[in-house]
Length: 313
Image (cartoon, rainbow, N blue to C red; front, side, top):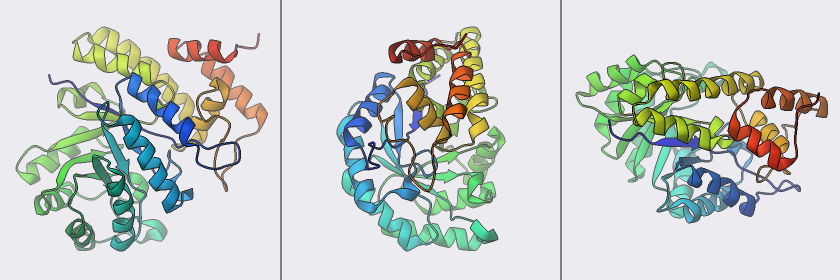
């Protein structure tokens, strides 16, 4: 089995005055580099790019490329948009900074405005007619819908710069159906979820937001699985699952990432969330900290020790 890649959907870190903190972002990225994890920069939920200006996104991509290039893969996970023109504008910012690939979501389906299949294909025709850069198509139910696999296959067939598809919260049969409709294999980035060992066997690249906090734990899982030590890999995967269960109480967004950063004093913890979103009250953070430390994950325990945090007895 070829070594699977792993990518972190990176949070963006801010200074205490709310500005983008390039220095802390570099330190945050170095934790991913040390764990040999690739990065997605600018994710719409975990990355809070809805609150970033074009100039700030340019700074983010530049910092990411400077820190990561030649060490780990560095991709831009572009903010989702409603029009081809807006997406092209976002793409140009990331391309100018030198990212290796662009991840493009399908058109947003807010307010029930779900695109027809012809509209979705036409959207990608417009965008990719203007962009000649490696592209990963991101299929995510948070867009409000899931395109049929044959539609994703048709988009891939029409545009040779598409190098992979990225699947969030999907079963592995979706990938197989895309490949069957396309008539060939295509690389896949797969969100670490239920049945994670099956996608590893399929040679996919895994990704997760949880690696913002525990990158070394994810590296250990990948290394054990690659080595064929499935018993030990399953044990580590159990730790990851318990961590995921805890953080999903706060939803698939940056809130829990910033809470964990604050508790463990990780790079950029001072800045918190960008408005209109606010950090939870101190009591909620204390409760989260207690549950976090009770997970018994050695990487979390080491960070807590370094930060001077301990369980309240």
